[in-house]
Length: 72
Image (cartoon, rainbow, N blue to C red; front, side):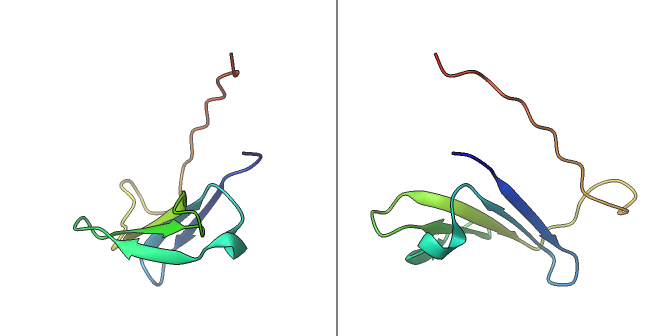
């Protein structure tokens, strides 16, 4: 995994996170928690979308915290 894409759609009120290339999406599946899982052709989850997303705070932006843990 080289990069993660985080997309906050303020008009559509969604938060989308991609762990892999979005073009690899083959199927999507909605969970009972208003989350859509995007999967590749082998069934591996390559992203998710949270529906009805409203960030907490003042609403001026989306804060993302990243932690890198070296592979052992």
